[in-house]
Image (cartoon, rainbow, N blue to C red; front, side, top):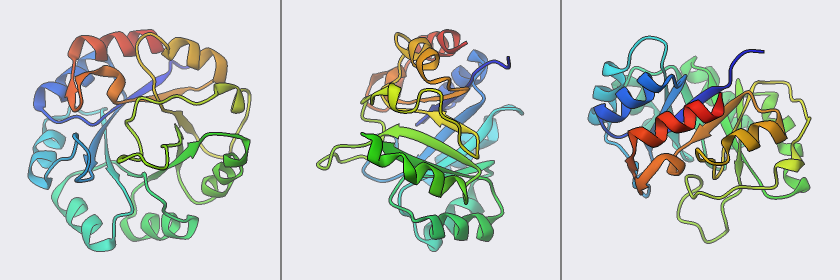
Length: 212
């Protein structure tokens, strides 16, 4: 069986990119959301994208971004994928994919069984699905909150597109999460940080090793 692919999200420095690359991560995420402690300017994101070695996929995370915002990001930063992490409708996902001709990953928040049908809806229009813990109603951020959900909800399920498990994963629980859900891809952000927005190279390495 192919090894589990890891995405490390919310990188902010060249050292973060090097840590993700040397650990064997498959993707890294650049956050464009001003309320996040991981938010980047286009200039900084471009620098990080340019130092990334071949084979490390560059993913831009946006939240309900309009065309003007996406235009600026895509013109300024060499990217491999867009991650839509807001309340974008399936129609909006299809529109973004068509406009930019880039693969699109759509995040879907899960708290209970009632959240699962939308995974199918989005898998008809997105290239990949990120299955994340649903943020609480009063949360300032749609993700990166360090929350898990009941993994039994998705155990053994199959969707039309490749999917990635997110939400509260860390070096201590990722192997168990993979065992319970059958995930072949996992995403981490706060679980490899020493403080909000500050990545820890040792935790990144430990996470990737545990995921495999």
